[in-house]
Length: 108
Image 1 (cartoon, helix red, strand yellow):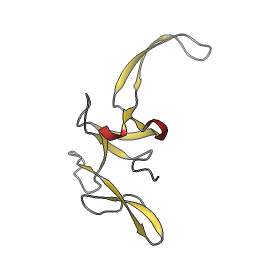
Image 2 (tube, rainbow, N blue to C red):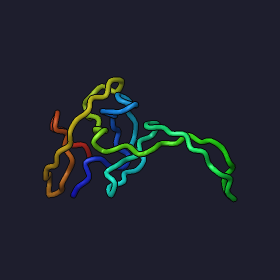
Image 3 (cartoon, rainbow, N blue to C red):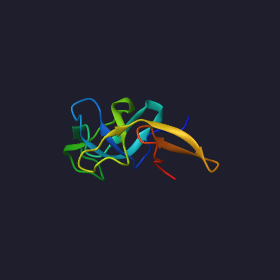
Image 4 (spheres, rainbow, N blue to C red):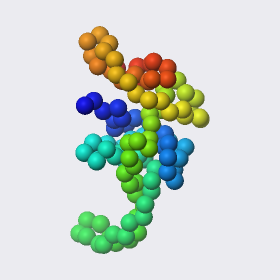
C-alpha cells in the first residue's frame, strides 16, 4: 500500500496534547502505523550512562499515531496551516499523491 504520509512531509496535529501544532515528519513506522514529528509529543526520558552517552534526563519526540496527523495543504497560508486528506492519481504514467481539498499534486 502506498504511504500517504512520508518522511519530510509537513504535517499538522489533529488530536492530542499538541493539537494545532505542525512540523516535519522525521520518521514513519508503517508496522505500527505511527510517525515521529519534530517538536511534537515531547517526552522526558531518564537515561543511564553508557560508553558513548552521559546520564541525565533528556527530552525527545515520541511517536504519534498516523490518524492524529494530517498533511498540510500546499496552498494554505504558512502562518495558518490547513490539513488535507491525501488521494492518489496516475499522472504521466506515475502514481502521485494529490491533496483532496484542492486537487494539487503534492510530490512529483
